[in-house]
Length: 599
Image (cartoon, rainbow, N blue to C red; front, side, top):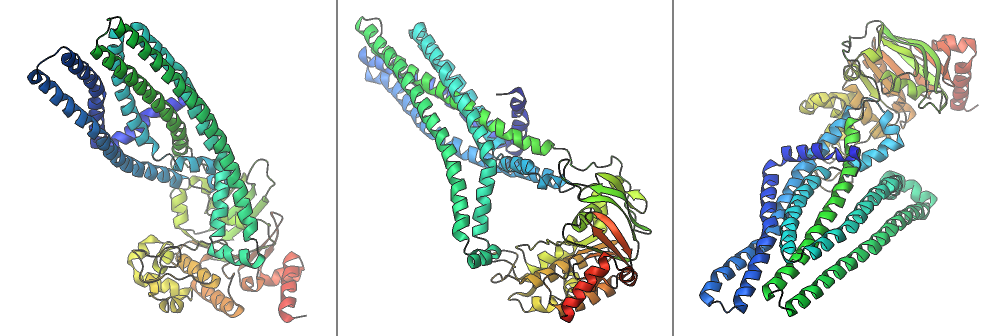
């Protein structure tokens, strides 16, 4: 166990005792009783046997027999009590640990962590570690119990034969070292297999996903994906099998070694009894003490191995909790003012990693307050990255972005985003009710049905919602059979209907200082697109908007159009002025226009 890993025991125990103090206190008391019982039963058994062989009267034996029976009954009851209070402590602590984990995850202000495969692997291990604090604490309590029991029984063994006692103790060392090595190997295997297990889960979800199901069946790729899943799973199982075989070999050898030590001790005890050096009670005490010491030592070894394993896993949990924000947060952030002048990109360069190509290269552009700015460019030109930077999901690698002259890095991200509404190109469709899907744009609207209805009406989805089985309480999912927040059977919307619902979510922030619409017309037919575009123009008249669309006709009324090409701004102007220059915008617009005209 490394020193760094070992330090995790204190915070784990602190969390466990804070969340389940009564349960863990009772477990500690039960463990103390459980530690004393084997020693007491062993000595009482010796006394009873010696008394019987000495011809002691029944009346004198009866109290010993009654006490022995009571202790036996108590011994039989303690495991059930231990299991109950351990499970209850586990539930309480696990809930708190998971809550703390996702509080930490929610504190990451940007997207960098969630696009980092190494962090995602660590997060997956941290998710599995929510049981670790309780398991570590319970294991520590049980470890102390076994140590006390082992010391008591070892002392009993020393009284009979110091030599045999020493041999039994020394024989435990190889078991300890082997079990600790196996624990480290188990954790290392889990860490190594984490990417493969995430990939196997990906194939599972893909094969059962309704949206992917259409292409899977049309292209007949189900068996191909299933084959990929099974090959990945076979690799995982092969690694686990190798580890299991090693454990089988090592632990079987250790058990045989322990049995040989106990057998040799028993032969010695019988020979000593034959020479009159030991009584029948002594032999019973010796057998019980050897077995008890070996059981207790085996328990100690197992618990140490389990503790080491859980600490190594908990180390990933604490690493996620202690991970610094990937975006620097100003110690004393400036309050985010209402946008009065505009947003300015000043020589902004950006790339997603030091070893990756530049996505934006020296972008300098102004988004004036109160104007609608259209962002145009081919796929990969950097439009979506501009959106991420505007929402401060990332910071520029070089250059800066200002909000009324204040660098976004000096603002509180939460305050900034509260002034921004957005529909992203890859918008989410949540397995929630219609009301909840819309209200996620502004949770205060959950208690204001009129706002939900108004936003849906502005997005032209209200009439569709009213025709659903339970209106706004309809669950938009086939994933769940029942849901307390919905009425009736869930439904699945079409792509265009989901698009409008995402727009309704954004329209809850219709009065936001900045509205970002990234491909808001995708999935809509031309008539619906024209109608929606008119609605947005009316709704946002005089407000600051950034509009991104590959359908350039929807941007022709924008106050300013910015053309991106290979991460750089190549043209800016109005629709009319850009057509007159005959540049990239004019070429793209003319090409699209010819397609609509059929020439």
